[in-house]
Length: 186
Image 1: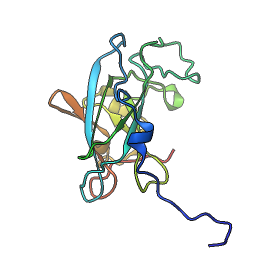
Image 2: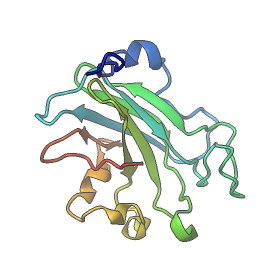
Image 3: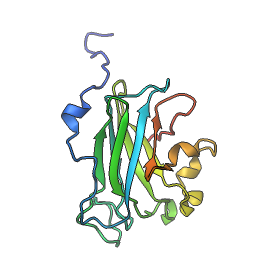
């Protein structure tokens, strides 16, 4: 290493005390439109051990399929009581939970509708860049034609589809190994 280079450093563990506030895991208010859902899961390393000091971020469209972002100029309704962004820290068992709504479909390549989905970013110790994945919904008719989901090998697609479990949607994230969640390079 030359004297002008800075040595590489891992990121974290500072997410919970510095970046996550209580209530950030709830994207809804009592006035938000749409079907309320709870998403629960665990963040696991390649050995199946819990990752207890990470941060999960969600970014999604509202129930009508519009993002609360200036670049989304669709003529769909903008819900002033839903902003589509949330954060949660993982607990000592790697668990996280979000309260949100099921998003509507948004246009994709060629202006074809994408299946309803939630964009997910994972920040954890040892990751120099965030990991990006998506949560799709079980039994959703548009899953079969979704452009992004169909770029994934059929045997790996289940890592992107939540499961119905105990009244919530279960979405575990596995960082590496046999059941590794599909991550996207965006």
